[in-house]
Length: 308
Image 1 (tube, rainbow, N blue to C red):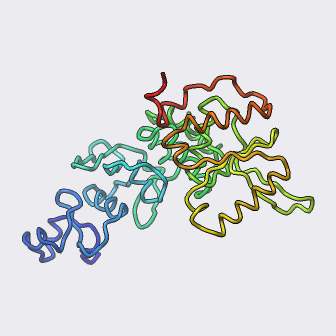
Image 2: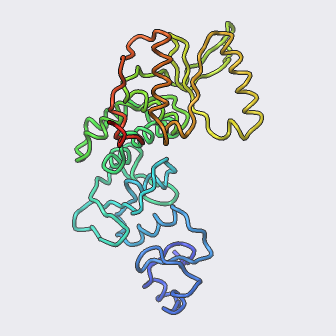
């Protein structure tokens, strides 16, 4: 291929194509890793950094773990290093900022011009890097966006020989169809880990003609309780705000109780969210609701230090 400085390249490759050390140290080029550069006219992106990590490896290498997730656009927390895998121990190359693993090339696919771990192998790889809740978020996203099924995840984790397969199996057991957003997945996990009954995901309510009237993010239809996450769009977009008002009026007419949760109710004060939902479910006589909430949610959400 012709030399293209807008794509990550090795310093030695730049020298071969007429660039000088002084030029590559100048403002026209940006260093991604040691001896890996790219033209500074190109915007820095996660995808560009993954390409740079692969430049340092052999041709048999592929982006794996969080790097594969970045290529796919998967919702993951910020993790500094890039991760690549090679098929054999002897092919591993160690560089600052790049973690190199040994993996099975059978699950490798090509996306955006790069070799990356397939969806299910990536899910299992991430079990060693993400928390239970973050991994469930990834699993729900794979079901929603990539056509993976919860059953496929459970089956693959059961058969896997990966060292973190048990963590992957634990997360796969919580993956569900229908979750519309990462925050809905987090909210569901908050409720379940606290010992509350698992809510139905995106329950559809239809009229006598079968036409969809409304849909609830999380709900307990037995006692007509809905728990929903509202992001900024519900406030900042007037049409959405008006739709919410009409929807709540219809719910009141049908005796549904709506518990609205915002980001602070998950990231700042999840205990308050749990107490609100717990109180409503007890008042409505929901079967299987414990009198006391479990503490299993605390290691995964803010508030762990306040356990006492």
